[in-house]
Length: 559
Image (cartoon, rainbow, N blue to C red):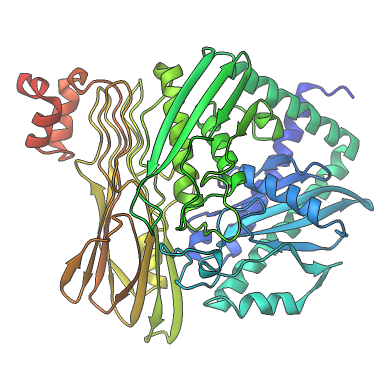
């Protein structure tokens, strides 16, 4: 079927708009601030037979692009009994997942009595049970310690809610009324997606839309292949390190080998560290998705659909911590290890085409959970927060300051909203001066915040990273500053033994947690930085005279 360019563009935007409206409904009706304010969710349309991604909402997390495709494929394989009106609920990390807090739903979509596609979404629930409020148990050694693991089960059967399944879930999580609100938000997004997709098919016809989907897939593949062909043929390597697994204080290495030949590219992860005891084990599908997201960072103009990933081969996870198998814990996989995989891709690309690349970003989502009881409101709560940091410098300028994590476009929840929802006070929330990696173009700056418990009792937990090694520079640029966490309890200060990971910190009113996130790596030799740019940073207080002299030397003296 021949499609003119205008019709193709309209259908492409129509499919994307369906998924984007699902995103909006999901966001606006969720009870958890992590979704309603932080946008930690994604919605998409997936092929009825292959499970491949057709379209994803414009504000959905990029890291969910691949894993939701893989999750859909697992569900198609395991649930041969899908019928119209069914809704599948699943959070199993080993089946196209991330960690237990990312809960996925899938609804088969029928058009005029025939299965046409699948609609799916993922939302980060602030808690799914387990030993630690919020699920980020940095010392977990098995998946059961992290929370409730749900296989692909039918929450709805032919349009009828299975009350037993719903009650089983709600009875095993903290703050069940909030989880019920998040569950219903995901259901609402699926219903809106079905309604809008029906309208799109009514308007253009199912055959025309299917032809457009195939053409869009072909074009995405063609464009990605064209981009890959501009990378010099060869083998390149990139390595990134996790601070520890939370249990054993030893670095975990993501070692990647990138092979480029013509318009094909392959990534081999076989030299990465073996499986670990703690919660940094990473599902294979998530590691693969991390490579996809990294490639989208490098070539952002390629439209998102399955064709985008066809020329990209990822393998070698067998026998490494990037192929999590039951019962290994996975809480730190999605937000932390995923970004180490991306950094290894960036490092390899930096060897291949440094003039088009950027230094490493801050690379940690800063997972911080606070669970407790608020006597004033007479309720239990779970506060989950992620934070920003500095991006790396690049050939044309300095890195972004306090940007979102590179695996997502989720934004930090406004502290005013968090203070309204939870018994906390943010005593400090500011740019982290001096944290940027030096370079011809410096990195962006990280964030410095301090949150104090006002009343009641609470337990704090965190799974972060880049506390031992800072984000790497490129072409002679310096590394960004490392992450730092400090906890104040009863007037005494302490540092987590694993630097970036800890759990079970009992807080009383007046106790606090302070987090300083990394800055981005610098690009190019610091000696080549424009003296005027150094003087501007000094005037603004971004760095002090001593640091400027140490990092930029004669340039500062000349100024």
